[in-house]
Image (tube, rainbow, N blue to C red):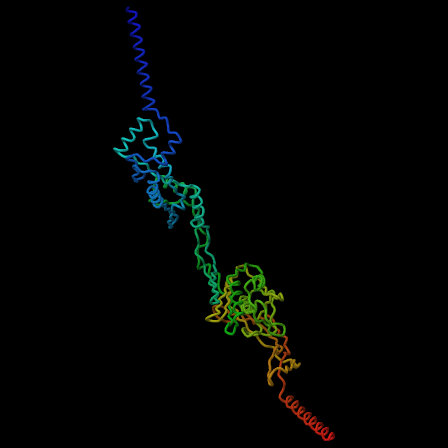
Length: 510
């Protein structure tokens, strides 16, 4: 019997152990093991479920609300966070400010809301109960995080680098030109620019510092960028301008200039203003002006032709060239190609004009003979002062140059002018359709004068001779009074003779 009792006892122990183990397994599977949530259940929870009591998202209480009900408040909180995420960084004395759009910041609020909705539901039964108890008693907060799109930040910083990175630049001569079409003004000024320190910012380090500041929510402090500097070699602006002085200047009047000519003069002045001519460089004015067509903004205006005034696209540009010519003579610049007009225009002293024509390929060409740069400044005022001034700047000559002219021939041609009678005109009418001009020869000279004493340096120097060929001209007149009287008298005699003849014929018939 004892052995039976022993067997029964061992069996009961085994059964008890198995029962306890089974209960433990059941408890473990029911209360401890997280079986997860099916996709269907998860989808239904996100669409229809509500947040458990005590859950908040970055300070927004979402307890008992559905995703749709909580979304507006959560999104608004995300927007506020993005607005506050502003990064400042310093380069030199300048502080730059980057907004969220420039940083590429974003807040993934949807994933945080999904995580909050699963709170108390995505664990085991025991952990879910514990989480719900904690949320109700203490509250559970899910925080929104500002994240950074590194590619956007890199693009922003690289674009801004054109501003805070600088190329080392010595102090140098600068010509500023402004052009105003409404007042037909061109204004030029020359000065020495301040030197610029070269600066190269460590872009990679700056991007890393900004990303770290956003990540750690330390955007209130100003980040100081790291850079390397290169110092300019030339910094003395006064010394630079001492070696760049006005060595030639000439002014012509625009008082009697017609509208179309004035428009062309203004356009040509704008193209010439600020021109830098390097040592040994040759300049063609026709090339500088470009295509002189109406499509390019040039107008038809009067010009001096071979024997009369004609219309030509770009008329008036010759005044700019003539003004430039005299200024270049004063600067003792080499003139390679020049052609004078058929007769001297009114805006300049005879002998000092220069003609240019795109249609006839008449060019004005000059070359810089110096070892330094020449700068051409143009100031054109077609509305108020009505004048055109061209200045030449370059290395000082130590003297000034005066240009003088001497008329050595001026006589009228022996040939009579061509006279055409127009019977449709009134008696006494007279019009020159082609001007009558004397044949003229003019010598052009230059005189050098010392800058300090004003005394003449050396002898008077001959530049050359300007010739105007002379024109017989052409005139249209109306019928003369004497001829009319003769014609009327002849008509009267003829009329009387006809009347007498008719009378005799009538008498004979009777």
